[in-house]
Length: 88
Image (tube, rainbow, N blue to C red; front, side, top):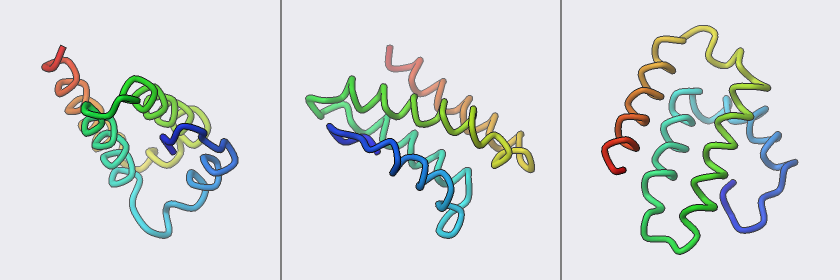
């Protein structure tokens, strides 16, 4: 999802099918880890933009994934925000 040439169709397939292998919170945390762990990559700015874009698209188009556990989503986003803030 964060490669040099992302495929938007693949993004939408991921967001429609990931539930068969993980929970929404697990995928959210995996995206946050990808954002965090790319610091040494020369493409880090592009990777981070794509991670944020993926989260934004997910929340915009598939918000119902979090309707059962808004507190867990809010906690995951807040923890990630604090990690990002502590590095700047």
